[in-house]
Image (cartoon, rainbow, N blue to C red):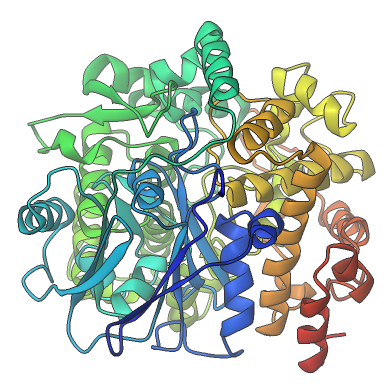
Length: 627
């Protein structure tokens, strides 16, 4: 029998409500694991180049990994992927909570959805069976109301729901998929793909635990983590926003649409202030001891319902410092609007910050904004703009297209103010503080991303991360404001590991070492695996996603970052510290070489693809003239 994985993938064609089951062999799971690698495999196999991401030809994939649902901290995640309507390239998002584990308990490793329903539907999956059900009565409902209606209809309050809200239904290009009402598969606009298929939700329920080969080994690992709570206590206590003030002190907190690196109101929107004011509970994901999830509540001047959880660091910076909002309750309210309507907080915050800069420079006027004074620091204007984006009305209809398309339509100076990579809005981490991070933004297959990336400040001293990474041959600290060959080598190794983690699918917050992760995979599956094999899974994922983008027409020139990052700050702790374009371009070329890609084009070489047992990908690129 299989261990760690179920061995079944559910296929759903919404055009005729046909449901089938696919049963891949064991080596498929060992080669691709799940998550990112599995999603990229099917996108390359089944999509024709150039299809409309919002057309019925696109496929939508919900995928766990061989670690999803295993009783160990970090196993509560799943991925959701498709061709991105935001970038036109490979797209996926990872999300926590309980949905991914429940999918495995329901008897499936993944769900592949194709076609488009004639009218709104939702998919119910329970104990090995799937059913397409009418969702006309759910269309237009926010996430809490829709989840309650689905649970009532299925007569089971334990049903787990992944869904879109009104923003996904209206095809806001950075709409996301929401699990459990308050967890988001946030990036790449996958919620818009779901909306284009008229798929409101996927409800899952199962009663069989995920089979594991060595449960006692997993129990020992869990006991080790509980005995070493000090390794994650800060994250538990203050959440991801607990690091906001440290970034501000270092000059790397994105502020005023990335024009500044420090914010006078940083403390007011920090994790520590959240803890001391509006925090009412700490929540967790399936089987996880870390419990980093915030639950907040407020009544005045903004009503904030704790059912929507609370803002993470990215949200506090995107809708806070980058828009120069120092009102934590306003940020929490904005977070609620995003969760209720399925909007990516990173993308919408970066887009609104762009609009605020455009307004202050006269590119947008009160006539364009329906009279909203869309200036930095105006919390009411932020919330008004957000509501217009959800409704796709007025200026909101333009901003719902994402920062790249909005800037192109405005023209003139606007594109130079748009902070994106490949069409995806830049997350809230600063390349002028973290130099390899900028390289990571550029070469990411999804457009700018902070999770499968390298955060230089964590490598600049003898931390647990660096001690663990000696397993990979990264032996010494690396200065944060440097991008040389040694940093590029460390970046290459570490990001391959992150691609693996997105395929497994495991959360990065539990402080597992590389060796412990390998032990988790061995205990779950019974495979005699190694760190080397797991890195190769990550490398396979990186090459599959790269190949997909190459086939879609992306070239080396698309691996770039906004010019603003190459201009030093004029004030703050990083004043005068330059991020060199020459060093960036040299590192990009060296990265291509280290990855086995053509140093000029960035296309994976046939030799590299064959080395990764991806000969079929080399043949696919060759058919499309991409040798």
